[in-house]
Each structure stands twice: as C-alpha cells, then as structure tokens.
Length: 145
Image (cartoon, rainbow, N blue to C red; front, side):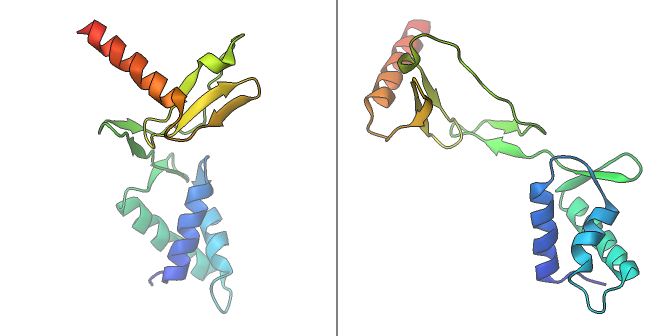
C-alpha cells in the first residue's frame, strides 16, 4: 500500500502544524477522508505507511510507546552556522525608555528591525539604522582585535 502525492502533502501539512506530540490515529484521521470507500482499517494502514516514510526521511521521531513528534529542524544562518529550532517559541522583550536606540537583526534572513515606541518595525535595507548598526559592529570588532 502506497501513499498518493495528495496524501503525502496532507500528512506533511499536518506535521507542519504540529507543535506537540501526536499519535498514529491522528494521522489516520487526516488520511481517512482521502480514501474511498472510507474504511478506518485502511486509513490506519495508510497512517503506518506515512509514519514509516516520514520517520525514514528524518521528519518525525518516536516519543514514547504510542506517540510521535516532529523532529527538530536545523536553521542555517547567513554566516553558515547551524542552530537547532526549538519546540516552543520564545518571546524576546527589551524594557527601555529609549526604544529608538535598539536594532534587531535576523541572522537567518538578514531582516532588520528598529525599535519604536509602538514596538519593533521592519526597516528597508538602505536605512540609517542598518548603516549605524554596521558601523557600531565594525568598530567593536576592530577594538576586539
């Protein structure tokens, strides 16, 4: 028994939405509506095939006896370093009386954000903040030797 491309896409979309662990029955539920005639045993058999396929590709891993989870992904930064993606999001907050002095740079995409009284805002590549941040970093690297 093999998965169709549509079924593979559905399972992949299901996995992309999962932050917590899941069971084979969750995958069978996704696949159940794609088969005709609808048969729970066949959906479970397809779920087994999907789990084996995605586990072989390294996209999911076992977590306990009944559960699976999405494998941690690795993110590659612009400088080539690789960092593991965490299971949960983290909120990074800065408490300041002068938010305009802060600049945040996404080291994966190169996006730059300026601090403002309303929070972070994305800036254009030719912005003075980007130029200023680059100058500060260059000066700091020169001082560090």
